[in-house]
Image (cartoon, rainbow, N blue to C red; front, side, top):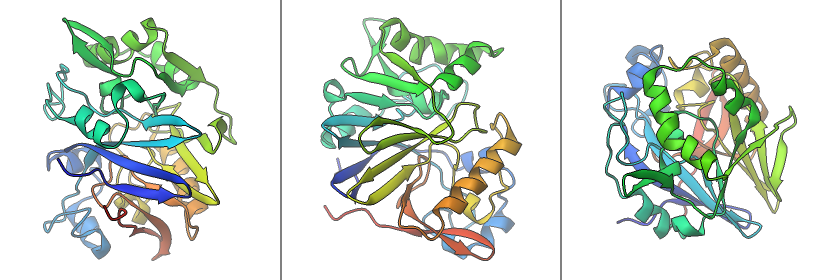
Amino acid sequence: MTTPASWTVGDVTVHRVDEILLPRATGPWLLPDATPDVVAGQAWLRPDFADDENILRIDSHSFAFTVDGLRVLVDTGIGNGKERANPAWHRLDTDFPQRLTAAGHSPDSVDLVLLTHLHADHVGWNTREADGEWVPTFPNARYLTSRTEREFWAGYAMDEARRQMFRDSVIPVEEAGLLDLVDVPAEGVEVAPGLRLLPTPGHTPGHIAVELTSRGRTALITGDCVHHPVQLAHPGIGACVDIDPGRSEVTRRELLGSLAGTDTLLLGTHFAPPTAGRVVPHQGAYRLSPVPADSA
């Protein structure tokens, strides 16, 4: 097993904990307006973020780091052994826990799990199967998400696939008393020194991004307010699963505008390696200037 990729942000080391590279069909399904012709117009996307036929690469991973003595995990991926309608997510069998442990964050040691939103590919490792039951993977952690997010889904007419996801990956954490709901105002909320949740609604109503600051350096973990770097060049391109596409675009434009030309490290939750970079102005919009992972 390779050493997890990592980036230094002040005194904090942020690890990318890989789960899987999603199937090639994922990009055209998820971002249908990112056609090969559109992608071809952005040569900087190749070869890392798109292949030689201009098909997007989409990744699934989490981020782990330690701040203020707390071992933190941001989003928990798809998970193993879950019954899922999406074939790419169905009954996976990956070595994610071993990769997390290799990054210095064994499941029992995690103190805080931040969930950017409650979609199946962001909550799957909330739980693991034990003796036929779904139990919290991180039994010593507090799981945090926004109150707006949880309350939205509580009142939403879910299809069976989404109900299944809540039954196996959200409700067991709630029943264990480990899920905390956080009010996230417009200016964000600090949940630990240097660790702030920012409201980035649209993909889901309570979606949050995670901002990390240490010794004058800043990083921002996107969740799904930005799925792929092609959206930097074309912020109007949205995901087929956005709950509120208009709000999602506004959020994306505001966020990218605030980051452009700054030293903030953007860490994309679905960005294929090299995953991280800085937002720079480009052709009337933006592009990602990749920042390679630290040397092992």
